[in-house]
Image (cartoon, rainbow, N blue to C red; front, top):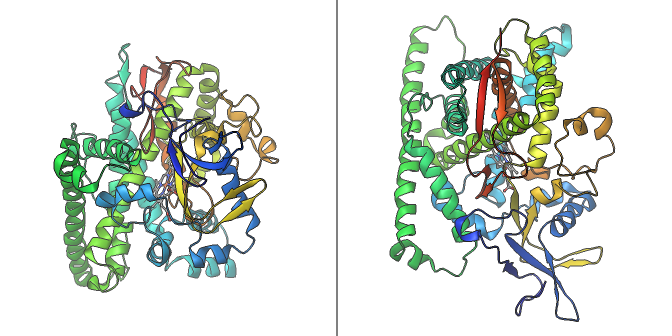
Length: 505
Ligand code: HEM
């Protein structure tokens, strides 16, 4: 590719006709100049190159602690600064010691490994049980898991009622229904607040999430637009401000509602001391408790984390569930096979109700994984490379903004035979053993990987199993003609258009 006067390490924007409308060909958004050839051609890192190099950094670095403590290569790319007005320095965007400290604080609330262990040790006796119990109790109360599962099921059932009304032989876009369901789930599990987005349509919050995500991309590809000009002179800047008001208003309300409720609960607990149990229900409670009246976490710190989790915790899972339904709707044979698995596992029941049941749905898990391979909810991430690195024939200079192109890696034929084909069997254990450990990275990898990945898989399994168990899904668009819309999240541009047909019970 020939471009004008670019130096190694510089970001270049590639001309993609649709970029202004944020409907980009996901294979080329922003690239970094990796090398300048003698013939004035440039080697650009977009699709696979930079990413593969980056992952080798992690492989080469045996001493992961060194990376962590020095915050080398875990600092997010400059473009994330465009998210600061919304997410502030929450877990997703922050760096260095602030990120490290908050991640340590928050991790226990999302450590589902602990919860799985806990489920298993229920049947064990003696010292192992005692040891596990002691280990996990302070970090994560068992009550939380029960509550989460109950909430997943409750929301799945509400969603089914809504979808029942759409099983009428017509085509419906169910993307908004799934979004509302995912938002209800994250608000109730993580924040302990019931926002009832499924019943309360035309949700301003969701609209603002979409707008802000699109504006993020708009700004990311126009680093030359001065902040003052954007903030004060462009209508888009004013829109951004109005959207932020909606988003922050929503999260502030969630926090104050929860504070009030906790206070009431604490008072009731004092009255009813016979129970004596400490009731910790959500991630937000953990933050409020850890804040020590603002000494450790300020109100702004808490709001930034709440915004981060409300966004990361619903938009990503929504896209993933919708792409999965789209793919199943295009592959009736695979849908039939997973339907049989679900029926066998659930017998007469409509929805899964325990973690053990979810763990039994193995083929469904392969389907979700394969869907995240083809359509990763987060199609690319960015890192600020802090120190120069030499990787094979590439020299990545310091201060480069590297784009790690997850979408591209997942469709690399070196790692996947017929990479554009939907084939969940790739993720059967026997077919996964020889895969490069970094060839599949929908949740990123290393110390800044996704904190909510277990949560996401459990949530998706509950909702998808419920839908497939109730309806036969037929998609309208195909893999060949579906339009992809990329902002921060990779979504089907027209939503997910399906026909639903109720299955006999
Ligand atoms: C299918 C669903 C999901 C996908 C594909 C996904 C993907 C990712 C990816 C790729 C990253 C790395 C971002 C970067 O480096 O810039 C990330 C980080 C993160 N995710 Fe997720 N995510 C999902 C669900 C969730 C859920 C359900 C939650 C919360 C409950 C969550 C919370 C977070 C947070 C807080 C971070 C930042 C972690 C850190 O930097 O320490 N995600 N996610």
